[in-house]
Image (cartoon, rainbow, N blue to C red; front, top):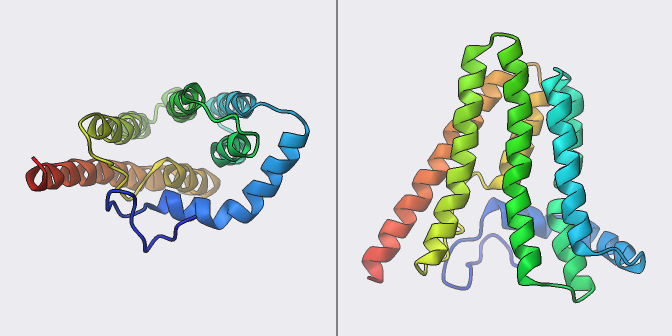
Length: 208
């Protein structure tokens, strides 16, 4: 696994996401090996991760923020595990990659919608607004990368990739100050969108 100081294939700086995966590789790969021996399919792990995130969203909608955060953080472990299992079992596929990315977006959505439902029940209008902005920002972070890759740019840059958003949100929900943390997460999510737009602009000027 490459270190954060190195660059991607097209000269793109690797993200905190890459660094986290590099640090976790010593845990992820043995777990993937154990799952391979159980004959589990990588897509099963992907679907399990989404199911756990859906449970987290339901728990959050009841106001049990700490419990919901723990379920969400547990579910996030599948993000790297399904890919490692696919490599360990030589079951990598384009559909698997597509399914993983699609359910990642849905997973983040159901968690934030659960939090939105709770704050709407409590009449917390500011919290509800911030959740909606965070949800839109998370979609835009993914969309800007996908659209950039569609026009030929490897757009992995940005401060708050999905694993970092999950970690920050989890910390916020476990803390006594979930709303201030979510506000900070939302601001940094939109900052990441701006980073990606600026990166593609610079690269398009350099390589028209």
